[in-house]
Amino acid sequence: MKIKIKSEELPNLYLLIPTSLFCGRLTSWALSKMPQNQACPITGQQVIALAKTLKEFKKHHKHFQLLEVQSADGTQVKITL
Image (tube, rainbow, N blue to C red; front, side, top):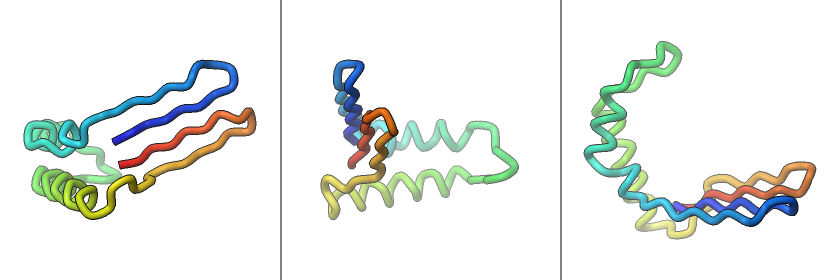
């Protein structure tokens, strides 16, 4: 996953975050053990299934843009797989 933040006031920020950090079994297990939000309950099996799906999606759709935001002051944020 890549996060790019471009700003006129501050230096540009470019973060590379390994997808395995979000899609690993340990992370999925840890997220499944967190306290449940009553508005959006999710089980451990659903978290693991979501991680597997995201990993498969990345294999087939490289450089997929998840988010692109531009503020009024010109700051841009892009998140891609």
